[in-house]
Image 1 (cartoon, protein in one colour):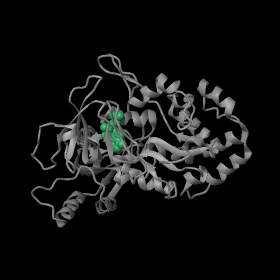
Image 2 (tube, protein in one colour):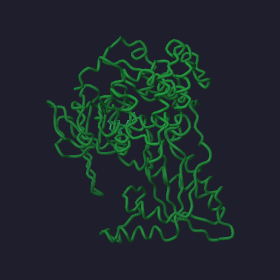
Image 3 (cartoon, protein in one colour):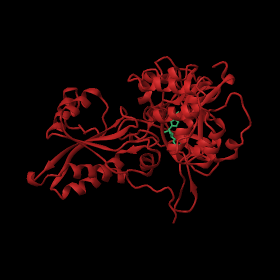
Image 4 (cartoon, helix red, strand yellow):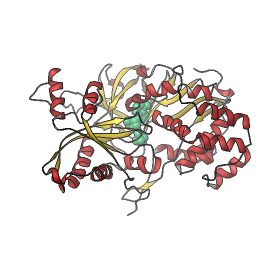
Length: 454
Ligand code: AMP
């Protein structure tokens, strides 16, 4: 699809995550961490179509700052060889751009002097960089000149002028990042979504990778597992439990993916809702519709309604000491900041105004909520820094009633109205934001430990 990719390199931001143990003592880690740490990756044969600017030493370094710093530095050094930029998910590539915004002076300094930042302490990285880092004042000046501008529009194509496309997943929850990616790439670069996969199983490929993100379909690879499909009927109360075989799914219908894998998962519900768009031979092709029950997602985190509710309950315990309760709440995944973060809009009822919760207490409530969210969220916060501090925006009393009035004015039923637990419709966001009386953030990181042993 893209000629000449063997004549240059890919700047891919690839990372390993730390490993955990299941209560039964088994090693648990995401699929890419397994792959990068395996010999398949580490001793892969030379393939001119898959040459990365990032050295294995940087990809395999578990400290995310050192890893990112080195990968960015190598990408800058080889900027004319870079033909494509990528990360697994769109959020990862934007994090890299944000990293450049924050760290370009140090990167430019290293390029100017030919010495590696003392914050990079990993011996394998230092010894690799010793060989490739040379003083290049012209490049240092170029980086400084580009990065010190206030306007970062098109920064990707300015720094990496030979980029032919961006290789990132922008389907599903990642679609929210398309406008920002277009902004940083000057709007002209194709976005290629090549794969649909999970840690449990590889599912499918996009056989038309240069198509528009909204038109992406993934073709299931029938040899990867035993695939079955649970018809998904969004009408409340109607559940259909009869599984459909791979070749029998119907175009236009939505299904939940169910897999039986070689590793031993039996009729495992992945949690993804897919819509059939066609067939390649007898293998069905799917549009990724959404993840079931996920309200909030910034990176690899997936937070559902019950987890959010638990978080609110935990924060409410703190508020009850001040005779205050949460009347209503809703949430929003704010990706205008990089990294993105969760925003909770809450309406509070304070019974004793002489003893209302202080700013510090509400900051603490943010942390209490985070402590309750799942371990992938906390790992993203603590180890990967791919999610920013959770924010609570307190709205004035009566705001949620106004929200209901608004919904009813747009034909919602009074009887059946439910407060949406997640919002992203602009008029609703504007209404909520115009009623904000105070804003609070987590001041600390929640707890998260990489190794959990019995
Ligand atoms: P993980 O368990 O972290 O490997 O994540 C796997 C999940 O990520 C899948 O079940 C999907 O919900 C999501 N995912 C993976 N690939 C894609 C894709 N191409 N488009 C949308 N979502 C995806």
